[in-house]
Length: 135
Image (cartoon, rainbow, N blue to C red):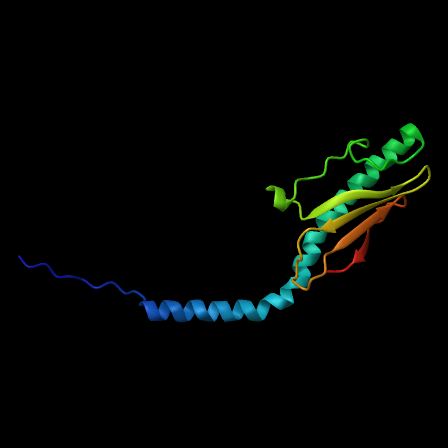
């Protein structure tokens, strides 16, 4: 009773490494073209949170006839950043508040495209987020 050993078709180590090298080269070619899309997608977070700050400031203004510099006072809880084991890529602050106007800022904590410039967005009492520093 001799048993025949049947060979299964498979890839050897060299073939696998060549395929991985080709995939890596393709990623290196495609990645610079995708960086603006990645930055744009991540900036949606800043715009959304700044709109939430705007809404909280407007509500506070209707109650007290002034704007506030304190995020806690307007009941805005900033999301935890990726450095704090959260998911947010921006830090948020109200940089100016008077009786008639306010300005809030979202500053990226990560350089999305590796050029050394951090993305910054601002919003004021008009309610339109503006990109101050492009990443």
